[in-house]
Image 1 (cartoon, rainbow, N blue to C red):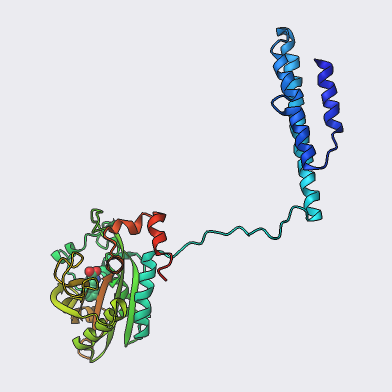
Image 2 (image 1 turned 180 degrees about the vertical axis):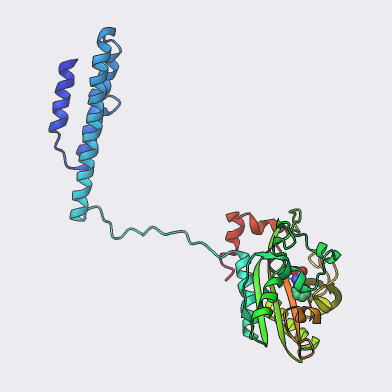
Length: 341
Ligand code: PHE
């Protein structure tokens, strides 16, 4: 057995094949199912027990040497093929990379933003981690006022001046009123957080676009016109809006806005629950207390504000019935929007 091992080792060292087919033949001859080395392993079973250790070791060395040599020959064959250009088939189609697509929430947010940009609004952004002043106090939510419960808040620290996750992007509007020169015309897209149980209709994270316009002589009629223009750009030129009285601490008067159902065009269907109308946003004239809290003279200036949920608009646009789809990163869902824009 020793002699045969040595003979094969010498054979391996002298192997000089260059073509891939020859290398493969050598591999089969040595390491294939009926190859010389494989057969030696079979015979090894009959070796006397006291010799097993020695032969076992050299057999393994032989096997490794054979595998290494084959690998080396293959590599040099590949290199010389590449050098001579033989392995390139220029007629083969290239590898295509799978393209990603934009998330439906981003698509709708950008659409909302671009509509308001056309009306002269600038984009303003602010921090997601906020203080009580910018989310509540400056927006006319007095301490202990039950209106704070309208927005279940995630608190990060509880102190006299707690740190919290913003529940709406109205906080960005406060920062704008504190720092920007008048007139102000901004929209504030961003992520907001509310401590709500996750279901098909509610989530603890969602996205808003809120808007604010402050100037001299801004009226409710201006607000109505801006929202009507937005609704028609977003849902189609035939869209009607209606306003219902509502309440927000930071606006007075306040309204909720419905658009005519773009599915049944007002006839009544299960998306609009037979009413012909879909609720899309809240709005109102900025409360004078809010203007004053940010140092704006409420006798000279007035303004309106509005806010909408991006996922809600996306749900209406594409009739997605379960809000959770937007957060679960299921490619089967996301790929449906590949060709949306
Ligand atoms: N901030 C309100 C909300 O998150 C929306 C809103 C903004 C309502 C501005 C009126 C005016 O629900």
